[in-house]
Length: 204
Image (cartoon, rainbow, N blue to C red; front, side):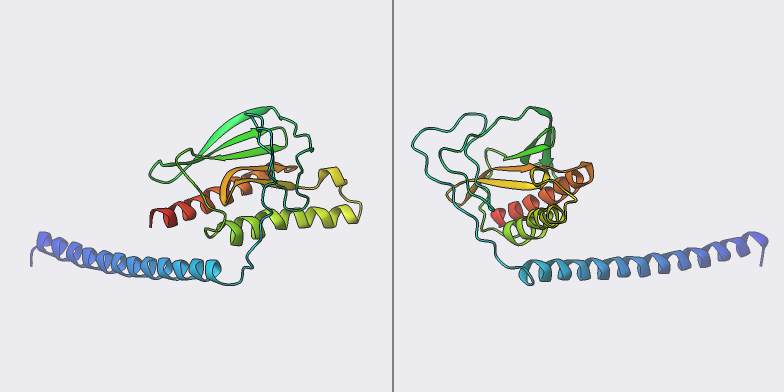
């Protein structure tokens, strides 16, 4: 057998090994994706208690155009409660992988306002809003800060708080206050994932 024929034979054998390796990796990737999907389904279907959101109090006078009355889960606001308007330094957009606008984030000094896209009616009862975003993210942050405040490691006015502005069962705004850069990053990621999942269910 000629030297050229030997080289071709060697390359063909090498090609076959590569193809087998690729096939094995693709099979492993498919299996991992299947496992991940199952884990996500279990997390959304089990292990979470449904949060009962406080309904927005009825107001006789029209709300201000910049910020409507907010509903704070830990201490609902009343019609007489003054609502200050923060100054926003940055506006960011939350979009799906395909570029569909989910919501806009208005980021200020230690304050975040989430406004769903005008064509999106996100319902508070659509998973994983209550089960994940409210209970596993927002409430957990507030609970952690409350515990720190009890031990004197945090001032009461520095506790993380969140308000959900609703019109019936539809989310109109979400306000969050008292967070650092690391928490802001977590909030952005959690909001994007939650709204994406809710949007998928809305389309279905």
